[in-house]
Image (cartoon, rainbow, N blue to C red):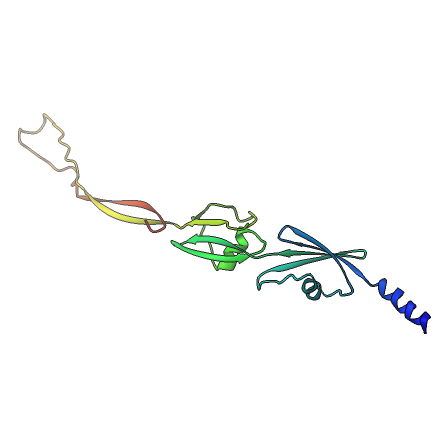
Length: 178
C-alpha cells in the first residue's frame, strides 16, 4: 500500500503546471494542477472585468497568461463624446465599436491603423461641402458702327441683343456644422 501511495504522489507531480501571469505590468508565477484559465486566475486572486481579455500561450510545461485590462478610448464626433472600453485594437476598431462610419471628407486626428491606448482622445471633424447656385442678370452691349454711306442719325440693327443670365455656383465648406 505504501508503494501505491508513493506512485500516485510521484505521478501527480508530473502534472503540475508552471504558470506565468502578466497583469497590468505585474508578473506572477505559480504552480497549479489546473489547466483551466479561469481557475488559474482565481487561484492567483485575479478578477476579470466584463471587457477584459486573457491571451493564453503554452510552451512545453509552461502556461503563459496575459491579462489585458479594458481602458477608455474617447471619441469626439458630431460634437458628442463617445467612450469605448477596449483592451486592444486600432482606431478603426474603436470607430466600428462606436458605430461610427466616416465619410471621405471627414478629418480625423489618427490614422485608422493606429493602436488604441488608455485615455486616447480621437477627434473627428465632420466636413460637408454644400453647393449653392445663384443667378446674375447680364446686360448686353450695343455696338455702334459708323458708316459714311448712310445719312447722319440713321440706325440699323445688325443683330438684336438680349439680356443674359449667368449661373454662379459657390461651394461652401462646413466643419462640424459651422
